[in-house]
Amino acid sequence: MHMKGDEYFFCRALEAMEKVYLNRNPTAKAILELVRSIDDDRICYDHFAFRTFGVDGHGIDSLAKFFTDFGYVQREELRFTAKKLKAFWFSPPSIPHSDAGTSAFGPLPRIFISELLVDQMSPEAQKIIRKYTELSGNGNNYAALASALGTLTWKKPSFTEFQQLARESEYAAWTLVNGYALNHVTISTHRLKSHLRKIGNLNEFIVQNGFKLNSEGGVLKVSPDGLLLQSSTVADSTSFQFSDGTIESVPRSYIEFAERLVLPEFKNIPENEVKEFHRRDGFEVGNADKIFESTSKDQLNRRVV
Image (cartoon, rainbow, N blue to C red; front, side):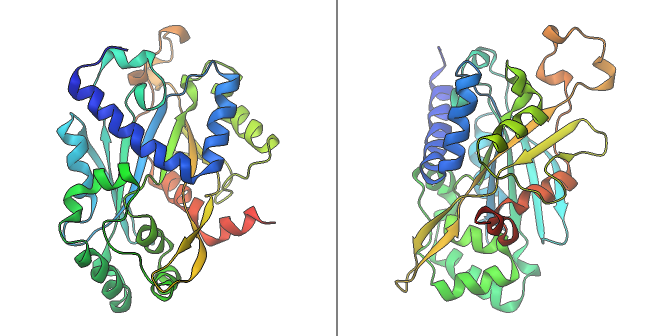
């Protein structure tokens, strides 16, 4: 596929982030291979999602700049009051010739970046988070690079601090050990060619192949307007060596699936003429809130049942 230099660079950066993600998450890798085996080797991503600490420039803005510099546009804010989170999503620029590619070189994904509202955490949790973001120095300026390398911009935490954060916020503990690494990628199911383009069929296919789906709020998460359907696996875990030498299992990432249905005003357009802009766009707080649970202890415990 022919791309301008800057577009090629941008997609190579996305590919590097994806590579880190696939190396750490065997479930995601296996599912992508399974879907490719049925669907002509072509996958389009609906969105990439990242987690951040909303403190001293280490939040949403630290990653957003990389995407907005390459033509992404900031869209709606989403609030998750109980989880003490906020998020923005970013729509991609239009690159017509990317439509023929696959994965990171396919149609550009939306970007979803959330941040923990650190000021709302307990003084103990704030102290731990601020300790590590301060150790990061100017690392927040290189969040996209850290994501592409799979490296923390602060030093490894102690197991005690990780546990202390986990008791208060699973999101905080996840971010402490994973940093800016991709939290999940999302397969755009309606862009598949086979019967798997219906998310119900894809969910069934994944379960039949022995993978567990996040059951929080039901396996299928449906937006109130019924036009955005989402599901996700339960996160993988890998062993992690903490700064005190303790080696423990920590949650990594998961893979999500999204089907965007055609908006009512376009329902008469023949199926083969339907484009992405004819479909439901954006995100839904209720759906996303349940998807966040893919890395929670409750869901992870289901993996070993």
